[in-house]
Image (cartoon, rainbow over all chains, first blue to last red; front, side, top):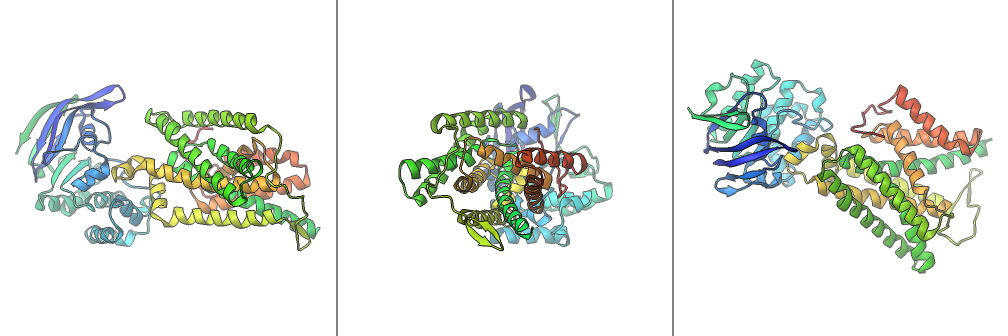
Length: 216
Length: 295
């Protein structure tokens, strides 16, 4: 379970989130929706400590994780997949996966990478750099880098941005359905209506405040 | 004529190996810290002065003087990184501000070196000047042979470290996308510290060897660093083959230019080449764009 209590944060002196409290139970797939500038991406970044909270707290299975560094969060089962710049352009596909899993020992990491290759089919592209991949293949790589950790909670920031509808369906079949099956808690910031059927919870933000939480 | 060309070839080889080593070590630090750090020139200079102090003034054996010198140079570089540049980055200072800060620190330290040791050119060795070994009609001294072997070994070692190890992969990841590297648990500060340790250690050894060969003055590290940065830019940042090509081109142009004109035109030749590359081949030999450079 992920619990956010009275989180406020912003960029520099500009406040973006105002006392947002949200609870997402284990296995739920939550959509974070709202207009531009409502604080959706900021909320995910704050949970993952990419931007520091000004006040408030984040709990993972009742454990206080506010301000934890990312390597600790990954070990606790939380991973964040950003919206853009989600891979290392100067590294090959294989190197990208190795960097994503840099906290693990080599033998363990090799096994996890092999599983990612089997799931995504990226093995044939392992020596290519992201520059040579299509948009869909890059998204496969981004998903692979995140899910390599077999997380308990995944924070997706617009995972289907810039991807055609056919690829969206493919990514949903490949990843979201799997995450649902293994009861992985998922928070998704997304504008696309293609995946409306998946959500168990809709969290609506407006101008940095929580407007509504709806359980489906 | 053949003897002249052979001598030129030796001189080019020595200069190329020095520029390559400094540019490789500097580039590694630059790729992690993301700004041109001119205090690197201080490390090159002060390591030579440390050896001078330990060996000539305190009469320590040479091996101990070199070891202490490299150690103190690394400690100085790490302190500058931890207590000044890390603090500036935490306060969201941009790369230009960090560059200016590093230039200011360089000037302070250069003046400190002048104050302590004087502005005159000093020599670490008290041996008589000797003509060196004769090879194919040209001459090369013992220290120059050591320079070639040591600097090439250091360059190869650094290149292997960056291209074949986990540490090198993390450096490249930070250079490519620092935030994503943080997301996946890479401790950026630790990687920067290690790149500073390795880069400073390498450059301090080059500084010591250069001082043994041609003596030292408070500004000699800065000139070496500038030439190495030019080699890095014309070679293209981020590609080792580019660095090798850039260092070789610059060393060749400088020595041939000095031979056919006069050595006082060395700087002019260097910066003309830089300007020509920036106009016609701004990405250097390798074609990799420099990120966030403001000079």
